[in-house]
Image (tube, rainbow, N blue to C red; front, side, top):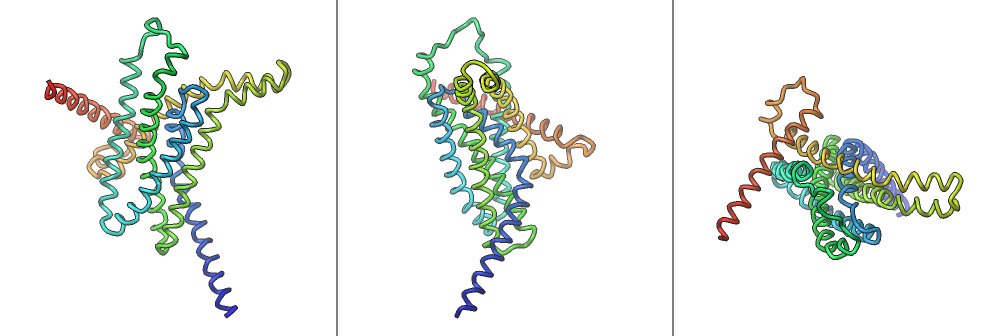
Amino acid sequence: MASGFFAILDDIAALMDDVAMTSKLATKKTAGILGDDLAVNAEKATGFLASREIPVLWAITKGSFINKLIILPVVFVLNWLYPPAIKAALIIGGVYLAYEGVEKIIEYLFHRAKKSEEVITESKLEKNDEHSEKAKVSSAIKTDFILSLEIVIIALGTAMEKEHPLITQTLSVTFVAIIATVGVYGIVALIVRMDDAGFYLVKKGNNKGFLFNVGGVLIKALPLVIKFLAIVGTIALILVSGGIFLHNIEYIHHLVPHNIPSIIAEFVVGLVFGLVAVLLMAGFKKVLVLVKK
């Protein structure tokens, strides 16, 4: 009886060891996507009133966990029943990411409000904040869904390479998905609270000394970090989408010359798909307007 119990413990230990090793390999392979995920979501979680930053981030984090709860079982079942469906879902997601990235660039280049046009006051922000907040949270959760889908599929592919049993694949991919959400949004939370940490250090330093200087640097650095993340996040959307198209559409893969660096190829392909998606969406909106008239 005792020997049977210890045999079960030994099997569990061996399973956990396989899960740990597989999760480690999968995390390495998804590191690039996790970096893009961080840049995109940090940019989306900023730009709110200080009192709303953490509630907004928590709403996005909950949405990310719900995304994982939807994606994980669907991917496992689809991979078992009809693997090509996963590739199709990835490509559709890639179009959405490319569209969002190119739309941000067009918005920045052609639709920015002139500085002299309007001064936005705190009270005006508060009036419009609820609608803006819901829109940004919704957009962030949709983007997270696509990035999460790619992370899960890459992690599953890594687990399948070693021909691990189904239980090992399931546990390791689930572990990577959870770590992705906790890690990414934990770092995002630290970024959006940089200014609060800075004000605390300034107060603690009594307007002089090392703590005061560090606090001042954190306060001044936050706007620069946000601008940087906005740029990196937009580029990441286009790069991830371009990578999806290159790796999952054979015609596109063979069309791009092999001597072009992969990062340039991914960006150009993502940009082209994004421009087409934006033009199609603009045309679709015009048709809807005409139909309503």
